[in-house]
Image (cartoon, rainbow over all chains, first blue to last red; front, side, top):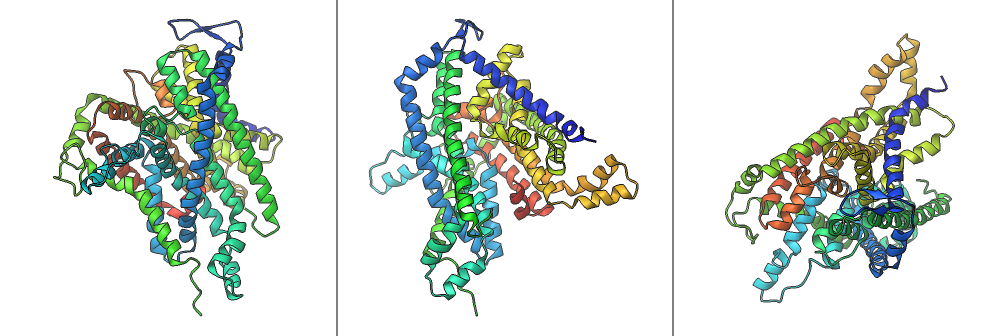
Length: 286
Length: 266
């Protein structure tokens, strides 16, 4: 029966239709004008919201901060996550692997608010680190309510995603390749740079794009750990809607943010396909 | 000959440090939840369940917990009901438009949560439902069901379709063959997808914050506003409860399908 797969897809397509309707409505709203004092909006279609958002220095500042911080967070996540994923993939101990996996998944499932709050207790002005510093007779450092705190929180949030994604790719690299290189006299470092790293590029890029997408849309961590001083896109949008309930203007901001995010992700997707293609010849088909 | 270890001791130590960094907040939140005073000092002073009692004593937290549990309990099965037939269609059939539909189904996953929140806020303002549980449930279902499709499709790709064909040849109806042969084999995917959606729904902040109001909130939104107003371990106690729940879930996953297998389906 030719129609069967389409029938099976009806519920999913219905859910997507609701999603698309909400989406279309929000784009329409971004071209309308707010009726003061209500949640309602009225026509005619106008580009005024986009013009005013694009003209505001805050929007430009926010776009740059968001991209810069997301890039930094992704880089740090990759630098910290790679060694852990590698040791996890190559450890001879089954117990160690299971224990670490258990810890990763529990952390992963433990929720965003929990973790943001935990970092607030640790990094806050009267937090654990600063209490310790003061007790040791040192001067306290500012770790929360700035970019440092937000970066620590988001990197911590992204690490389980990154490690679990990269782990799957690293496990697919045959150990025999590394052993052969070692037997032929290469040092561990040479094996890593010449064999493991090139073969893991597709997995690394896919784990990094996942992290970058997460960092771009970070909301809770900048909100709690940034203390209103770190302007990432999601926070600025949320704070704008809280301060003046101008839905059309906020919708225009969100639409521009979406375009920015999708463009950045499309670029990474391109990189991912290129790298997968490039290394496919080397036997690293993922 | 003993194969040389792939990594040197410094690399192993670095990995250990990173793991310690990952576990650090989880460990501290647990200490803080049982701490007598509002400030955490090391070593922790006193041992109390006061903050757990306080969490349940606050009416707003009780209401938020109830709302979050209702949302997750509706969203997780709803997503599975949508995802099972969709995954079957995508994994078992070749038909025109298959790749496009697959890409379309996965598209909600790349949209930032705040944008989804504003979209559904616009929708509920237009439809006139107002804010509250119904728009949250609808938004969370539309956003989260792709996770379940992905887990189930991965599961289906690993199955042998000949088993179902054999059942059909032996006279089972198409529906019975699915129900008694394929569905039992989908247990890992149902579990992985269901748990992922459940956690996503109970923990979601960025969509829910736009769809809640002063009367109806969910747990993440309520704890966020509590953290802003009060400085005591009540939210830490809540966090310990949620983390215990996720630890139990992980144990259950490991028992039922094995942790390695679960992670491959995510």
